[in-house]
Length: 434
Image 1 (cartoon, rainbow, N blue to C red):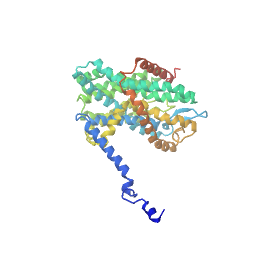
Image 2 (cartoon, rainbow, N blue to C red):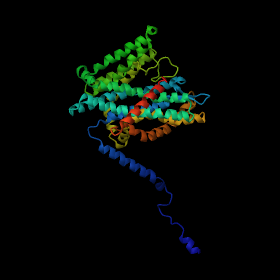
Image 3 (tube, rainbow, N blue to C red):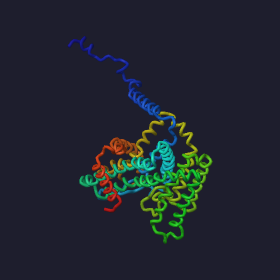
Image 4 (spheres, one colour):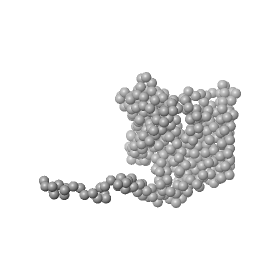
């Protein structure tokens, strides 16, 4: 080949193939443009009457669930390679205030009562029966629960056959089923919506006071001077009024029976009661259960949980307009829409995402922040580093799990019956009844 021909084959340097900051950032710019267009499209399709603040509060409460479980829950790995539940709160008491922030079920029940009231009112206006409305609401809650428990019922024998220890499988089953208690309680409370509306119409926000008083009485009996004579099951009496409290506030808020004056009272009163219960009555400082602790605030809810829910509800109502204005920005509103559309997937499958990393990790031994005991500050730093990985696993799982939220009209009855049987079997295993 001649010298001339070699020269003609050299690539020509043009602005498109020279490495410049502009060319390097071109893919990032393109992605940013795509996300901006997608966010704008979501914003354009949102009805004008949509209450963005309520949706934003729900999304915030939803994200607090996996974040709280992933940060405040860990594992111990025994000599046989099996995983046991553990918590950094057992070693780091100063970590407890974080649970005050991440325990946002009060907000979730508040916006649940608000949204259910609007939904029920619209159904009545369409001429739909109370039973028809309730069946629709319960189906939306039940399908994802049935899906995750049926999948895990099939996974248990498969994982055991692959060498996963039975102790690890019991630990995993407990983690998967624990968040689902919420769905059961929420289902019962949702069924009470028509009566909650009637109570709000007649007695306004004062309807929440007897619920607070009921929990206070049970707490006095189980923690007071006669505690030794009180049966342990008595605490279960707090289950319904404890979570109905914030839901009833949400119903009153939706019915315009709870305004800013009431919100200030909730914020101030809830904060004062919360402080008094911690400092004077020595309630446990953690809002979640700590392995080894004799008392717990959340299962079932104690008066401290209701005090926190009151303060959170008051703050949420007071900040509603500001949150609504903030979510007028498409870039902030689009993630809220995605999170709300994936609500049951997040609730039902976030522990599966954690176990997807932890169970394989247990075969590798001590993986910092994953299978090591949560008793060092290094564990906390390592677990924080794991959070993006766990979030990615949840997104990946959700791509396939979302199908369980879709209506099952076309699913054969035999498959639905099989799913129910598998779910029941998993519940028996997870609760230690088998």
